Length: 602
Image 1 (cartoon, rainbow, N blue to C red):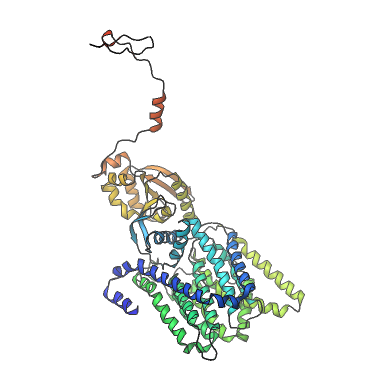
Image 2: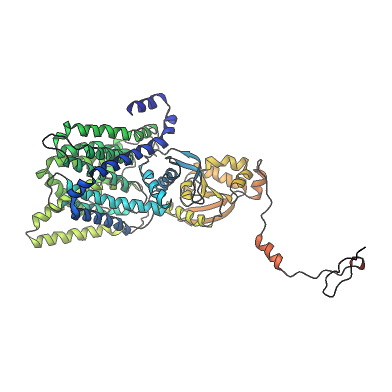
């Protein structure tokens, strides 16, 4: 695998390397799932005995609680179209098996035909996950958001199981306390009812934590060898977790530090090293994808994606998250510090593993140009570090309970203050928030307009992914402008429902979109099919295939006459007919009934 990757990188251009990404990343994740399922099946029976019925039911119950707790947040979108990009790539994978963003596709009648596509710079883990749900239940926004809610519940279950199986001596009640701290982290619930990737990224790292704890438990103290089956599960969960976000590759040092915290013998365990080698082979496709897009600026206008210059502002925002009480309860910070203090005193090696996990999942964004929680919808990055924070908080809650249980008044006072503070911080979870409100308004406009579009229409938009998810044919402007201007009649033959231009959010705020789009509207003498105002922006749907445009820009396609008005035709057929005029004798005398007599025979 390493030799193949070296050949691909050294002998091909970046564009040629990108051509491999849609297939290799999907098959890489297929391999992760297949091998992971094999490892889980091999350990299922002894795992069931280790957990026991009580822990199994408790873990599943916490998963169900996590799913329904996300219902406290509104059903909405919070990121400028990124969620729909993930969905649409998942739609493409479900129908074609290729991880591509469709810039021109037909999506009617439950089918999906891609005419033009490109490789997205983001890793394909989230679209791949959604593709399985879409294959079973159909591609829709609701299915995508339900899948993310399931992933929040899944995180709760595997986190609880991991702590039950861990070889570290933790305070009594730490597994359930840590799980509840994660589930009721406000931002987890806030983002858990969207299609954002961060809840899924947290879930896959939690699954890796479970695999680490299971693998550590399998170590034979006499021989120093671990189980190959748990090693297989460790390799596949680590590789799969790395497919979700660019910084997800940092799960490898996290897994290594947690294994070292469990037992130093893992440094010499051949099975663990073999698992590491297998995992690197499985993760190679996403490494190649990240390399093939490494020249992208990722939205940084000056090209600086990571820089110490961003440290001061981002650190103020991201560290303030734990003390300002806006998105995270101050009581949770107190519990996490108490958990850190307990671990320093009682489990020093565990401190290293959990602290490294937190620092890599939280600290990475401090240097990222858009990593501050103050920046747009970047508060979602706090979800990535929510699990290690919850682990410290759960340990702290259990340790404080053990300390105060013999003093009921103090325990009651502390517990009441903690619950009140936590509930008070949850106040914004049911809100939509002002952030992304214009993008949400645009998507709501698309839903309204899509419901009224005739079958067979094509919508030109900067974000065809939203229209595709609603079952409408759509394409990007660059793909269709030339055909509209030079061969409009041929395009109408292909899309008899009409050719429409979506005047969307980006056209409102970006002159590089607005200028050519405005010119096309003027040149076609377009008519307004739908429109909506939303604060400082205006959305519209223009119909481009006017009679004027079809005459001037028709090209070689045939110009059809106006369609027959069926209602008018039916009304004319049913209207009473006036009597015919009397006929001359040469054509037969009129009968009493007013009808002409048959002509005389010669």
